[in-house]
Length: 267
Ligand code: SAH
Image (cartoon, rainbow, N blue to C red; front, top):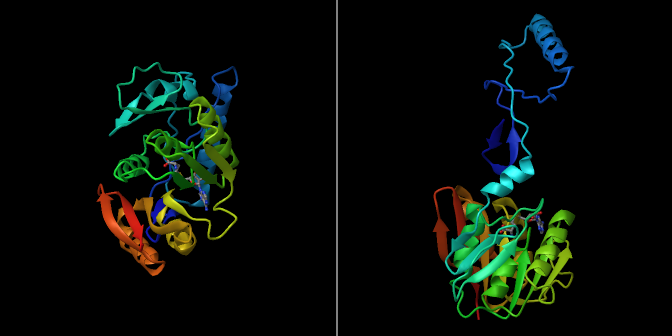
């Protein structure tokens, strides 16, 4: 499968690339049978004159608890003053640190992803931290919680994924910030022009372009929007969509793969 060059969300089939199909079978008494019958089936498949079918490769893998394996590699990480600490790790923070204790669960937002890190970087440059924040696509709640730790009084987080809403609520509790973080299921505030001095949106380029007018409508005059998750080559298109909605780019971060934009609304 290849990424569709026109849309980073869509994958398409490359008819010239080899396919690899990987299957896992429990290593019990039936495992040998499963391997034999797969081998026979592959052999029969050749008769259809498809592309060459390679030999079946079999290997034993250790039985790891993947959730645990992932957790073991998720260590505290610092992005400027913000320190993201996995909830199962003990951590001594330094004075001035904005510590967010996080268990992302099944939601996006471990703080490890370059787009989240870029967002956390730009967020810390918004001085002074505005009182009210809107976090669109809040995932685990990582950005909104960091903003609260950096001095925001309250935040509203939206996510279209129920699992993210649950994870963000649990993380708000975990940080004793549930009173100040209002997590809602959905995409954007129901009131079309409810405005915030700072809006965070770590979404993909296609969504940002499509949502630009609606996102801009939630930024206060003179307010800031931090847009991340932009595949680098689409940054121009995203900037144009926001320019058409009245927001001007004041800073761009680009690591070669991902771009993050800071945009300002006219006062
Ligand atoms: N803010 C987190 C998560 C970003 S991932 C971080 O920075 O790490 C993007 C999130 O946006 C996902 O949780 C996804 O469920 C959510 N999402 C996708 N489309 C959305 C939409 N139209 N409106 C609101 N949230 C959306």
